[in-house]
Length: 97
Ligand code: SF4
Ligand code: SF4
Image (tube, rainbow, N blue to C red; front, side):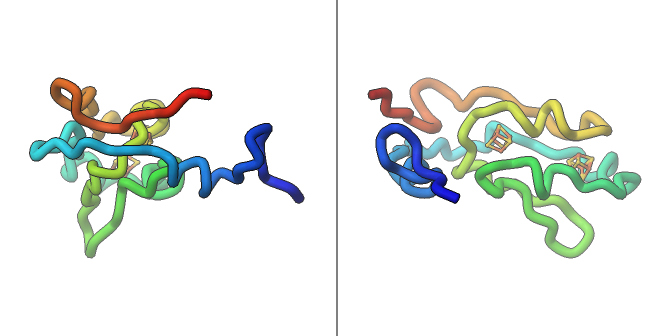
């Protein structure tokens, strides 16, 4: 199947056009106490940028890659994710057109 869009780019190529201005402070935190009771671990699959990673029994956050789509805040069944926009002009920069 052809995954390219009208610009002729596939999803990976489109993601490669993004620019990030990294904040030194994470805009995402996870309450790992709530994660202990979570069997679904939806965060590991719902995030298009693979921000969430399970390391031993904890969920770690690679916030630098966040696309600011908001999906994880909807998918987490236990409300364990505290998500805010990055500070100031930090975070992802999309190109339009
Ligand atoms: S889906 Fe939510 S509660 Fe479950 S592991 Fe991920 S962040 Fe924790
Ligand atoms: S907002 Fe989107 S890209 Fe960022 S961590 Fe959540 S699901 Fe991943």
